[in-house]
Length: 184
Image: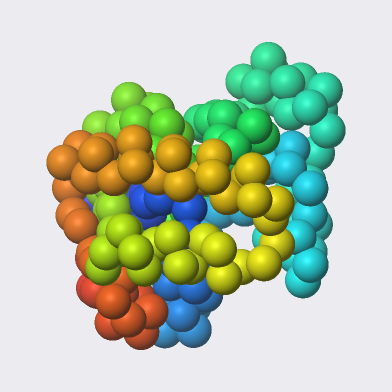
Protein backbone atom coordinates (compact mmCIF):
# COMPACT_ATOMS: atom_id res chain seq x y z
CA UNK A 1 0.00 0.00 0.00
CA UNK A 2 1.40 3.36 -0.95
CA UNK A 3 1.35 6.52 1.14
CA UNK A 4 -1.80 8.37 -0.03
CA UNK A 5 0.12 11.65 -0.18
CA UNK A 6 2.75 10.03 -2.40
CA UNK A 7 0.65 7.65 -4.43
CA UNK A 8 1.02 6.49 -7.95
CA UNK A 9 -0.65 8.83 -10.44
CA UNK A 10 -1.41 7.96 -14.05
CA UNK A 11 -1.95 10.53 -16.80
CA UNK A 12 -3.65 9.15 -19.87
CA UNK A 13 -5.66 10.32 -22.84
CA UNK A 14 -5.74 10.08 -26.60
CA UNK A 15 -2.69 10.70 -28.79
CA UNK A 16 -2.32 14.38 -29.62
CA UNK A 17 -4.12 15.63 -26.50
CA UNK A 18 -0.92 17.14 -25.12
CA UNK A 19 0.19 14.66 -22.47
CA UNK A 20 3.90 15.22 -23.15
CA UNK A 21 3.50 19.01 -23.13
CA UNK A 22 1.58 18.94 -19.85
CA UNK A 23 4.17 16.63 -18.26
CA UNK A 24 7.01 18.91 -19.40
CA UNK A 25 5.25 21.89 -17.80
CA UNK A 26 4.61 19.84 -14.65
CA UNK A 27 8.32 18.99 -14.37
CA UNK A 28 9.13 22.71 -14.30
CA UNK A 29 6.57 23.34 -11.54
CA UNK A 30 7.16 20.21 -9.49
CA UNK A 31 10.71 18.87 -9.89
CA UNK A 32 10.12 16.50 -6.94
CA UNK A 33 7.63 14.47 -9.03
CA UNK A 34 9.32 11.52 -10.70
CA UNK A 35 8.00 10.81 -14.19
CA UNK A 36 8.53 7.26 -15.35
CA UNK A 37 10.23 6.63 -18.69
CA UNK A 38 8.40 4.01 -20.75
CA UNK A 39 9.89 1.42 -23.07
CA UNK A 40 8.62 1.34 -26.66
CA UNK A 41 9.22 -0.45 -29.92
CA UNK A 42 8.28 2.57 -32.04
CA UNK A 43 10.86 4.54 -33.97
CA UNK A 44 12.46 7.55 -32.32
CA UNK A 45 11.03 10.92 -33.42
CA UNK A 46 13.20 13.97 -34.08
CA UNK A 47 14.34 15.53 -30.81
CA UNK A 48 13.74 12.44 -28.70
CA UNK A 49 16.54 10.97 -26.58
CA UNK A 50 16.85 7.27 -25.76
CA UNK A 51 16.51 6.72 -22.00
CA UNK A 52 14.98 10.17 -21.52
CA UNK A 53 12.00 10.33 -23.89
CA UNK A 54 11.58 6.55 -23.99
CA UNK A 55 13.72 3.46 -23.83
CA UNK A 56 13.68 2.52 -27.52
CA UNK A 57 13.90 -1.27 -27.75
CA UNK A 58 13.35 -3.98 -30.33
CA UNK A 59 10.24 -6.14 -30.25
CA UNK A 60 12.38 -9.06 -29.03
CA UNK A 61 13.83 -6.97 -26.18
CA UNK A 62 10.36 -5.74 -25.22
CA UNK A 63 8.91 -9.26 -25.20
CA UNK A 64 11.82 -10.49 -23.05
CA UNK A 65 11.19 -7.68 -20.53
CA UNK A 66 7.51 -8.63 -20.43
CA UNK A 67 8.24 -12.35 -20.03
CA UNK A 68 10.57 -11.63 -17.07
CA UNK A 69 7.84 -9.60 -15.35
CA UNK A 70 9.91 -6.42 -15.69
CA UNK A 71 6.93 -4.35 -16.89
CA UNK A 72 4.27 -2.89 -14.61
CA UNK A 73 1.97 -2.53 -17.61
CA UNK A 74 2.13 -2.99 -21.34
CA UNK A 75 0.00 -1.88 -24.24
CA UNK A 76 -0.11 -2.01 -28.00
CA UNK A 77 -0.82 1.33 -29.60
CA UNK A 78 -0.74 2.27 -33.29
CA UNK A 79 1.12 -0.95 -34.06
CA UNK A 80 3.85 -0.43 -31.44
CA UNK A 81 4.45 -1.84 -27.98
CA UNK A 82 4.72 0.38 -24.90
CA UNK A 83 5.39 -0.56 -21.30
CA UNK A 84 6.46 0.81 -17.92
CA UNK A 85 9.55 -0.69 -16.30
CA UNK A 86 8.38 -1.97 -12.89
CA UNK A 87 11.46 -1.67 -10.67
CA UNK A 88 12.04 2.13 -10.86
CA UNK A 89 8.35 2.80 -10.08
CA UNK A 90 8.34 0.50 -7.06
CA UNK A 91 11.63 1.96 -5.77
CA UNK A 92 10.35 5.55 -5.96
CA UNK A 93 7.04 4.67 -4.30
CA UNK A 94 8.86 2.90 -1.43
CA UNK A 95 11.03 6.01 -1.03
CA UNK A 96 7.92 8.21 -0.75
CA UNK A 97 8.51 10.03 -4.03
CA UNK A 98 5.40 11.11 -5.99
CA UNK A 99 5.33 9.04 -9.19
CA UNK A 100 3.62 9.95 -12.45
CA UNK A 101 3.09 7.55 -15.34
CA UNK A 102 2.22 9.03 -18.73
CA UNK A 103 0.73 5.99 -20.43
CA UNK A 104 -1.96 4.71 -22.77
CA UNK A 105 -5.45 3.81 -21.57
CA UNK A 106 -4.81 0.05 -21.84
CA UNK A 107 -1.89 0.51 -19.47
CA UNK A 108 -3.92 2.68 -17.08
CA UNK A 109 -6.38 -0.18 -16.69
CA UNK A 110 -3.53 -2.54 -15.81
CA UNK A 111 -2.14 -0.07 -13.27
CA UNK A 112 -5.58 0.07 -11.62
CA UNK A 113 -5.37 -3.72 -11.18
CA UNK A 114 -1.79 -3.46 -9.81
CA UNK A 115 -2.58 -0.57 -7.44
CA UNK A 116 -6.29 0.09 -6.80
CA UNK A 117 -5.33 3.27 -4.89
CA UNK A 118 -3.58 4.79 -7.91
CA UNK A 119 -5.06 8.08 -9.09
CA UNK A 120 -6.06 7.85 -12.75
CA UNK A 121 -6.24 11.22 -14.54
CA UNK A 122 -7.70 11.57 -18.03
CA UNK A 123 -6.42 14.42 -20.18
CA UNK A 124 -9.19 15.39 -22.60
CA UNK A 125 -9.06 17.67 -25.64
CA UNK A 126 -11.26 20.77 -25.70
CA UNK A 127 -12.90 19.36 -28.86
CA UNK A 128 -12.53 16.61 -31.46
CA UNK A 129 -11.52 19.22 -34.05
CA UNK A 130 -8.70 20.49 -31.86
CA UNK A 131 -7.44 16.94 -31.26
CA UNK A 132 -7.41 16.27 -35.00
CA UNK A 133 -5.60 19.56 -35.65
CA UNK A 134 -2.92 18.69 -33.07
CA UNK A 135 -2.37 15.21 -34.49
CA UNK A 136 -2.10 16.45 -38.06
CA UNK A 137 0.04 19.42 -37.03
CA UNK A 138 2.82 17.24 -35.61
CA UNK A 139 4.10 16.56 -39.10
CA UNK A 140 5.97 13.50 -37.84
CA UNK A 141 3.70 10.71 -39.01
CA UNK A 142 2.34 9.35 -42.28
CA UNK A 143 -1.32 9.90 -43.16
CA UNK A 144 -2.15 6.23 -42.50
CA UNK A 145 -0.68 6.49 -38.99
CA UNK A 146 -2.65 9.67 -38.29
CA UNK A 147 -5.87 7.96 -39.42
CA UNK A 148 -5.15 4.98 -37.11
CA UNK A 149 -4.47 7.36 -34.20
CA UNK A 150 -7.71 9.25 -34.86
CA UNK A 151 -9.71 6.01 -34.96
CA UNK A 152 -8.07 4.92 -31.69
CA UNK A 153 -8.70 8.35 -30.15
CA UNK A 154 -12.45 8.02 -30.69
CA UNK A 155 -12.38 4.74 -28.73
CA UNK A 156 -10.17 6.23 -26.00
CA UNK A 157 -12.40 9.26 -25.49
CA UNK A 158 -15.20 6.87 -24.54
CA UNK A 159 -13.04 5.59 -21.62
CA UNK A 160 -13.05 8.97 -19.85
CA UNK A 161 -15.59 7.71 -17.28
CA UNK A 162 -13.16 5.05 -16.02
CA UNK A 163 -10.85 7.74 -14.61
CA UNK A 164 -10.89 9.41 -11.19
CA UNK A 165 -10.24 12.91 -12.53
CA UNK A 166 -10.59 14.63 -15.91
CA UNK A 167 -8.53 17.62 -17.00
CA UNK A 168 -9.56 19.36 -20.23
CA UNK A 169 -6.42 20.60 -21.94
CA UNK A 170 -7.48 24.04 -23.12
CA UNK A 171 -4.16 25.45 -21.85
CA UNK A 172 -0.99 23.46 -21.14
CA UNK A 173 -0.15 25.78 -18.25
CA UNK A 174 -3.56 25.40 -16.61
CA UNK A 175 -3.61 21.64 -17.17
CA UNK A 176 -0.14 21.33 -15.60
CA UNK A 177 -1.26 23.43 -12.61
CA UNK A 178 -4.30 21.21 -12.11
CA UNK A 179 -2.19 18.04 -12.39
CA UNK A 180 0.34 19.44 -9.90
CA UNK A 181 -2.50 20.12 -7.45
CA UNK A 182 -3.76 16.54 -7.83
CA UNK A 183 -0.27 15.18 -7.14
CA UNK A 184 -0.19 17.02 -3.80
